[in-house]
Length: 213
Image 1 (cartoon, rainbow, N blue to C red):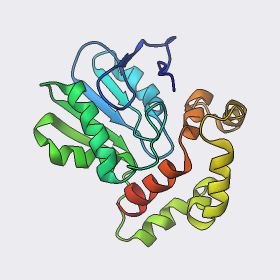
Image 2: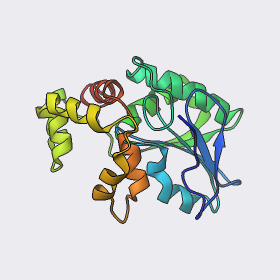
Image 3: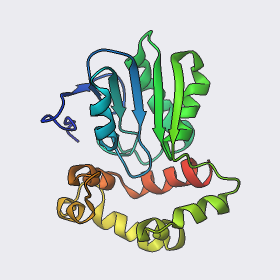
Image 4: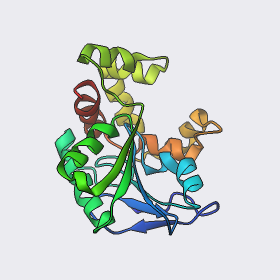
Protein backbone atom coordinates (compact mmCIF):
# COMPACT_ATOMS: atom_id res chain seq x y z
CA UNK A 1 0.00 0.00 0.00
CA UNK A 2 1.37 3.48 -0.76
CA UNK A 3 2.62 5.54 2.16
CA UNK A 4 1.06 8.99 2.18
CA UNK A 5 1.43 11.86 4.63
CA UNK A 6 -1.38 12.29 7.12
CA UNK A 7 -2.13 15.85 6.01
CA UNK A 8 -0.21 18.67 4.38
CA UNK A 9 -2.44 21.73 4.73
CA UNK A 10 -1.95 22.33 8.47
CA UNK A 11 1.50 20.85 9.10
CA UNK A 12 4.14 19.09 7.10
CA UNK A 13 4.13 15.34 7.68
CA UNK A 14 7.29 13.63 6.52
CA UNK A 15 7.39 9.86 5.90
CA UNK A 16 10.35 8.13 7.55
CA UNK A 17 12.02 5.03 6.11
CA UNK A 18 13.26 3.60 9.39
CA UNK A 19 11.91 0.07 9.73
CA UNK A 20 9.18 -2.38 8.90
CA UNK A 21 6.28 -0.14 9.97
CA UNK A 22 4.87 2.93 8.20
CA UNK A 23 6.13 5.95 10.12
CA UNK A 24 5.77 9.74 9.87
CA UNK A 25 7.27 12.77 11.59
CA UNK A 26 5.76 16.20 12.12
CA UNK A 27 7.86 18.96 13.68
CA UNK A 28 11.58 19.38 13.20
CA UNK A 29 12.98 20.46 16.58
CA UNK A 30 12.52 19.91 20.27
CA UNK A 31 12.06 16.80 22.42
CA UNK A 32 11.00 13.60 20.67
CA UNK A 33 7.51 12.19 21.23
CA UNK A 34 6.54 8.80 19.74
CA UNK A 35 2.81 8.04 19.43
CA UNK A 36 1.41 4.51 19.16
CA UNK A 37 -2.24 4.04 18.19
CA UNK A 38 -4.78 1.52 19.43
CA UNK A 39 -7.13 -1.06 17.96
CA UNK A 40 -8.68 -0.24 14.54
CA UNK A 41 -6.74 3.02 14.29
CA UNK A 42 -3.62 4.30 12.58
CA UNK A 43 -0.97 6.91 13.24
CA UNK A 44 -3.36 9.52 11.86
CA UNK A 45 -5.45 9.09 15.02
CA UNK A 46 -2.91 11.39 16.72
CA UNK A 47 -3.10 14.15 14.12
CA UNK A 48 -4.71 16.88 16.22
CA UNK A 49 -2.39 16.31 19.20
CA UNK A 50 0.68 15.88 17.00
CA UNK A 51 0.14 19.12 15.10
CA UNK A 52 -0.24 21.07 18.34
CA UNK A 53 2.90 19.52 19.78
CA UNK A 54 4.86 20.07 16.57
CA UNK A 55 5.48 23.75 17.42
CA UNK A 56 8.17 22.71 19.89
CA UNK A 57 8.45 18.91 19.63
CA UNK A 58 9.29 16.31 17.02
CA UNK A 59 6.36 13.91 16.93
CA UNK A 60 6.66 10.50 15.29
CA UNK A 61 3.56 8.40 14.63
CA UNK A 62 3.61 4.72 13.69
CA UNK A 63 1.06 2.41 12.08
CA UNK A 64 1.16 -0.88 13.97
CA UNK A 65 1.59 -4.18 12.16
CA UNK A 66 -1.60 -5.12 10.31
CA UNK A 67 -3.10 -1.62 10.49
CA UNK A 68 -3.04 1.50 8.36
CA UNK A 69 -0.22 1.53 5.83
CA UNK A 70 2.07 -0.95 7.54
CA UNK A 71 2.39 -4.55 6.25
CA UNK A 72 -0.56 -6.89 6.85
CA UNK A 73 0.84 -10.40 7.36
CA UNK A 74 -1.46 -13.26 8.35
CA UNK A 75 0.45 -13.85 11.62
CA UNK A 76 2.30 -11.86 14.25
CA UNK A 77 -0.50 -10.11 16.13
CA UNK A 78 0.55 -11.04 19.64
CA UNK A 79 1.93 -8.42 22.00
CA UNK A 80 5.38 -9.87 21.30
CA UNK A 81 4.89 -9.81 17.52
CA UNK A 82 3.69 -6.21 17.56
CA UNK A 83 6.48 -5.20 19.94
CA UNK A 84 9.13 -6.80 17.74
CA UNK A 85 7.99 -4.82 14.66
CA UNK A 86 7.60 -1.64 16.70
CA UNK A 87 10.97 -2.10 18.38
CA UNK A 88 12.75 -2.51 15.04
CA UNK A 89 11.09 0.67 13.78
CA UNK A 90 11.81 2.68 16.91
CA UNK A 91 15.47 1.65 16.79
CA UNK A 92 15.64 3.54 13.49
CA UNK A 93 13.71 6.49 14.89
CA UNK A 94 15.71 6.86 18.08
CA UNK A 95 19.25 6.12 16.98
CA UNK A 96 21.08 7.16 20.13
CA UNK A 97 18.34 9.50 21.36
CA UNK A 98 15.67 9.07 23.98
CA UNK A 99 12.00 9.91 23.61
CA UNK A 100 8.67 10.02 25.38
CA UNK A 101 6.43 7.12 24.35
CA UNK A 102 2.68 7.78 24.19
CA UNK A 103 0.17 4.98 23.50
CA UNK A 104 -3.60 4.60 23.19
CA UNK A 105 -5.61 1.59 24.48
CA UNK A 106 -4.47 -1.64 22.74
CA UNK A 107 -1.20 0.03 21.78
CA UNK A 108 -0.20 0.34 25.43
CA UNK A 109 0.77 -3.31 26.07
CA UNK A 110 2.86 -3.13 22.89
CA UNK A 111 4.54 0.08 24.04
CA UNK A 112 5.27 -1.35 27.49
CA UNK A 113 6.86 -4.44 25.93
CA UNK A 114 9.21 -2.12 24.01
CA UNK A 115 10.02 -0.20 27.18
CA UNK A 116 10.80 -3.42 29.05
CA UNK A 117 13.26 -4.45 26.34
CA UNK A 118 14.95 -1.00 26.08
CA UNK A 119 14.13 1.03 29.20
CA UNK A 120 17.07 3.36 28.66
CA UNK A 121 15.58 4.59 25.36
CA UNK A 122 12.50 6.25 26.86
CA UNK A 123 12.20 9.23 29.17
CA UNK A 124 8.59 8.49 30.11
CA UNK A 125 5.52 6.51 29.04
CA UNK A 126 2.04 8.02 28.76
CA UNK A 127 -0.95 5.67 28.51
CA UNK A 128 -4.39 6.82 27.40
CA UNK A 129 -7.38 4.51 27.85
CA UNK A 130 -5.17 1.59 28.85
CA UNK A 131 -6.93 -1.79 28.35
CA UNK A 132 -5.81 -3.36 31.63
CA UNK A 133 -8.50 -5.17 33.59
CA UNK A 134 -8.54 -7.64 36.44
CA UNK A 135 -9.97 -10.46 34.31
CA UNK A 136 -10.68 -11.18 30.62
CA UNK A 137 -14.40 -11.06 31.48
CA UNK A 138 -14.03 -7.50 32.79
CA UNK A 139 -12.18 -6.58 29.59
CA UNK A 140 -14.97 -7.99 27.42
CA UNK A 141 -17.58 -6.12 29.45
CA UNK A 142 -15.67 -2.87 28.89
CA UNK A 143 -15.60 -3.56 25.15
CA UNK A 144 -19.38 -3.94 25.01
CA UNK A 145 -19.73 -0.24 25.80
CA UNK A 146 -22.28 1.99 24.07
CA UNK A 147 -21.12 1.41 20.45
CA UNK A 148 -22.71 -1.50 18.58
CA UNK A 149 -19.53 -2.26 16.61
CA UNK A 150 -17.52 -2.99 19.76
CA UNK A 151 -20.39 -5.04 21.18
CA UNK A 152 -20.34 -7.20 18.06
CA UNK A 153 -16.64 -7.93 18.60
CA UNK A 154 -17.55 -9.46 21.97
CA UNK A 155 -21.05 -10.83 21.53
CA UNK A 156 -21.44 -11.54 17.81
CA UNK A 157 -18.04 -12.39 16.38
CA UNK A 158 -19.61 -14.02 13.32
CA UNK A 159 -21.31 -10.76 12.41
CA UNK A 160 -18.18 -8.74 13.19
CA UNK A 161 -16.08 -11.04 10.98
CA UNK A 162 -18.55 -10.71 8.10
CA UNK A 163 -18.68 -6.92 8.48
CA UNK A 164 -14.89 -6.72 8.58
CA UNK A 165 -14.49 -8.87 5.47
CA UNK A 166 -17.12 -6.74 3.70
CA UNK A 167 -15.85 -3.27 4.60
CA UNK A 168 -12.25 -3.50 5.75
CA UNK A 169 -9.03 -3.83 3.82
CA UNK A 170 -9.28 -0.72 1.65
CA UNK A 171 -12.72 -1.32 0.07
CA UNK A 172 -13.87 1.48 -2.27
CA UNK A 173 -17.08 2.00 -0.27
CA UNK A 174 -15.14 2.99 2.87
CA UNK A 175 -14.87 6.76 2.20
CA UNK A 176 -18.68 6.98 2.02
CA UNK A 177 -19.09 4.91 5.19
CA UNK A 178 -16.45 6.97 6.98
CA UNK A 179 -18.39 10.16 6.39
CA UNK A 180 -21.28 8.68 8.39
CA UNK A 181 -19.08 8.26 11.46
CA UNK A 182 -16.98 11.43 11.11
CA UNK A 183 -17.14 14.05 13.85
CA UNK A 184 -15.49 17.36 14.58
CA UNK A 185 -12.70 15.57 16.42
CA UNK A 186 -12.43 12.56 14.08
CA UNK A 187 -12.39 13.76 10.46
CA UNK A 188 -13.53 11.39 7.73
CA UNK A 189 -10.01 10.58 6.51
CA UNK A 190 -9.01 9.54 10.04
CA UNK A 191 -12.13 7.38 10.32
CA UNK A 192 -11.22 5.74 6.99
CA UNK A 193 -8.09 4.37 8.58
CA UNK A 194 -10.25 2.53 11.13
CA UNK A 195 -11.10 0.18 8.23
CA UNK A 196 -7.48 -0.33 7.11
CA UNK A 197 -6.84 -3.81 8.51
CA UNK A 198 -8.05 -7.38 7.98
CA UNK A 199 -9.90 -9.74 10.27
CA UNK A 200 -6.77 -11.53 11.49
CA UNK A 201 -5.01 -8.33 12.54
CA UNK A 202 -8.16 -6.99 14.23
CA UNK A 203 -9.28 -10.14 16.04
CA UNK A 204 -5.82 -11.38 17.06
CA UNK A 205 -4.76 -7.94 18.29
CA UNK A 206 -8.01 -7.67 20.23
CA UNK A 207 -7.34 -11.02 21.89
CA UNK A 208 -3.68 -10.39 22.74
CA UNK A 209 -3.61 -6.66 23.43
CA UNK A 210 -7.02 -6.13 25.02
CA UNK A 211 -8.88 -9.11 26.48
CA UNK A 212 -5.62 -10.92 27.27
CA UNK A 213 -3.55 -7.91 28.29
